[in-house]
Length: 503
Image (cartoon, rainbow, N blue to C red):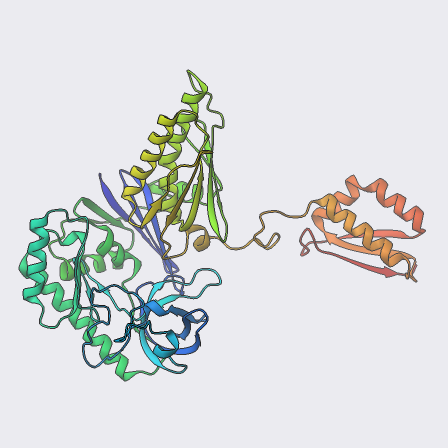
């Protein structure tokens, strides 16, 4: 599979698109705000401990307090010396003390306490950032875990011989019992490369510890790489061939980064200097706009509808204009198969996380159901985010979960509608007009003036003058009062103002 990165840099934002065989599969957007702070390390101060939830709120200097669960709190934090973890196998579990008793959070944290934390999930909506005291520093080949004495190896490195070699190599090279995890890119790493990356990560950790001792909370101790460099570190794997960027300073920075941090990386870096915007040249703008729509058409004529809510995301598959060639069962089966390819692509591109409910068109043939389910699992194997897919129900529903670590594309690029406030609907003009009539009748009982002055939006004024003339005339006749309608440009559809005046 041919992979490439396309980077668009402006003063306001940076966009990085990951393309597979020319199709955009992931989009990363970074702006000058705190929308994506994953990986950042802070010196925080505990604001409030919640024993009932076994969690705590921590001030890390953002508008919203971050929160931490008890299983993300180490038993001890000693920034001056390396501390072995209280969980011997390296798992972030709610570990017992020496007596076997599980330690509640009120015994681990107290209000006003300062501690080093790392963001594992950026703020999403009304939820603050989720943090942990288990620090990890990712590199190209390794992830350093300075507070956990544990050596891990990516499951994608299948060879037992290679896994043994890597485990022995890291054991020989580490001077301090820091924990390390080999990333997939670490397969086949040479001894010199490993030593260079270990030194780089350890030096970074030492600098973080120095800043922790020097500054008071809340303070940012370490900022993860920018979105461009994170993409180079995490997305440019062995099969990647090219990175194209439209900013000269960024182009030079990328080359310097690769030369210093990962000189062995064989990837072509190109500077895009043509007049046509880079995302339009790669035909990406249309795909991004399409990823913000609820309805996505399939090539066969069917379509899927994606509805994102606070609790879950539902994806509905429909045959649409597709009528098939042979029989109804085959039409449904082919529509479901094509929908799977689009669903997996849209979930990755939109970065949809949490609970996802897939409503496939119901199939009577059990073999077809099984083939659709297997195709779905196969399609999500390319997804780097952890997913869990449950078997298809009798009515064609599939429940799945996808790890959520950052905002979805919709939350990143869109905002709540000022008219419907996120409901997805606005009150109809007919309903608003009836509400106005009720208000007129209610005020008419105590009215001293001769004329009702009704101020409404331009849209409603046009509707009342055009479609409600007879109703307005009937009300004027019944009440013996004149109704004057004034359009106000700044009013939204549901807004109106009713006053009275004398002749």
